[in-house]
Length: 337
Image 1 (cartoon, rainbow, N blue to C red):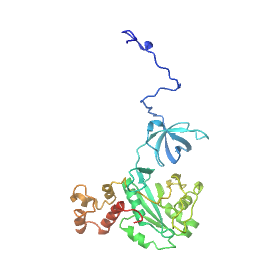
Image 2: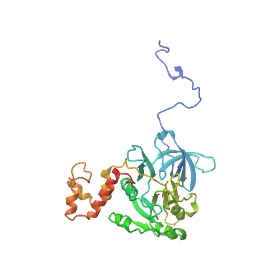
Image 3: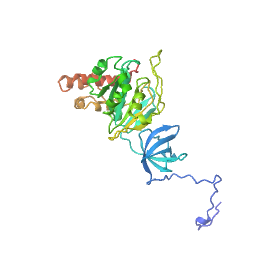
Image 4: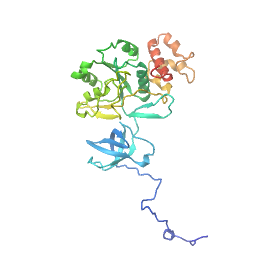
């Protein structure tokens, strides 16, 4: 039955009262052109600590972002109370495009990828030469994740007074990965931090490594004013370290040339389910021209791969092709294999 006449206006239309007293829902989202840019420093149970200018601000993600999560290193747009005063809370309304992403899955058969760090340009892979024993498969997996995510790797070998670094350096020499070798004594007197610092100035570097290798101790030495991380010891029974870092944290270097270090939780596995093997070849620019003759969807580790003949003709070092295939193969086996 028609309630209104033929000619009605808005005043004739009755609206249903909103019993909750809040504003009606709408699909129109605010644009927030006035949002200020900030950097996410750490994430803790839905609260994000951000740096906005020279102020540290606590914020939460706005509902309009949906399931898109901000991670440490993200550049974000923030509105609301940006004073940084106690008990204030701002809102993250925009996540800027990322220049790089370090991702991992819990395991190789886990389809859910986890973004560990955004916008870092370097990945420092910290590995002890003994106590605990080095795990080359884990190093390989970190390298694959770095190449896939657009980060340059840096190999940091600790405790060289307990074991020689020569075997590991020979293994990764063909990759041309920069490296720093340190001793336990150098960790104490600060020489280790000084030598690593040379590779960090002006860059954003994420630190990864399994527990007990000295990763957090090194980060504490690099940023002494921000020593909020505890350090752990290696379990004498299992030979593994105890997790002391539970969330990623970005810290500014005090040096005038600037730079950031991002400490991440110790890892015992580094799943690569998310990695597209075809992108790993991009980290080997000297081998890329040789792939022009490869069959479609070539994995570069099969009998018909054109790289074999191309390298045999002297266009590239065979050790480089071996290194590429070793990294590709690490996606098919676990770190402990």
